[in-house]
Structure formats: structure tokens, C-alpha cells
Length: 164
Image (tube, rainbow, N blue to C red; front, top):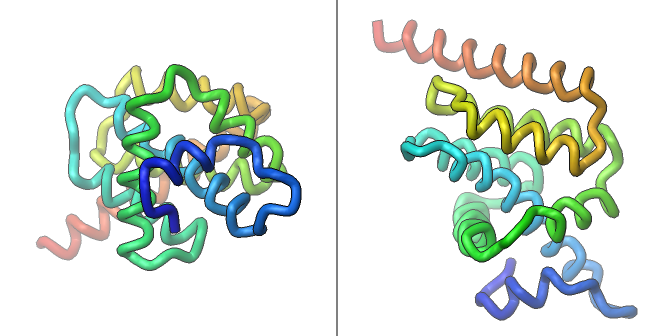
């Protein structure tokens, strides 16, 4: 796991030949985390469910423990707040993820967007931009959104049933 801000910025540089495989993995994890955080930051209001959705997505995607996912999300928030564009992150993802992996990431991002029960125009725009930068076909993008929307509705229904 990345330990310092220097590690964070070093991780955005291309891996040197012969660098350990875990350095590339950390870079990919950070790039993915930044995309999830960008959706969370797109909303004008903050909802704790969105942050939990980011952490859950990181735990699921990279098999991380709760502390590791939290630390990665913190680093991603710092990186996202300093970033001038998303290309440095999406280019890493394009290099390493095949289309099914990209679609899973888009679906996780939609899960963050729907975590507060409301989809803002800003969230919708971030999702469209990221999907475009990742070269995700429109039909696949829409299907990922529908799957995430159904999962969010099912979770909300289960929460309502448990409260009643």
C-alpha cells in the first residue's frame, strides 16, 4: 500500500524497467480509486453512503482490507484534488484493464453515484467522461448503469424491509 504523498506522485510516473510488479499494481489501484472518488466528489452535497461505496468497491475490486481501502481512498482524494485532468489515471487503466474489467469498474462507479439515492447531472457527466476516456461502448455503459441502478434499488428495498 502506498505510504506517503511522495509515493502517490511517484506512482503516477511510468514504472521504470525492472520495477517490482507491485509498483504497477499500486499505480493501477490508485488510478481506479481516483475514478471512484471523482464520482463521489461530483455531487455538490456529501453523503456518507458514497464514501462507503468507494471503500466497498476498492475492497471488492482489489481484495483489500478495510484499512487498506480507506488509506487508498484518502490518497485518491488527495490525488483527485490536485489533478488537472483524468487522462493520467484513465491512461493507466486503459493500459492494464481489458474491457470486462473496465465495465466492472464503470459499474462500481455507478454504484458510488447511486449510493445516496440520487443521481446528479454532475455525476452523470463524470461517468460519461470517464467511460469515453476508457473507450467503453455506449451500450455496455448503459447496461453497467442499469445493473448498478438495480443493485442500488435492491439494497434500498432490503434496507426498507429491515427497518419495517
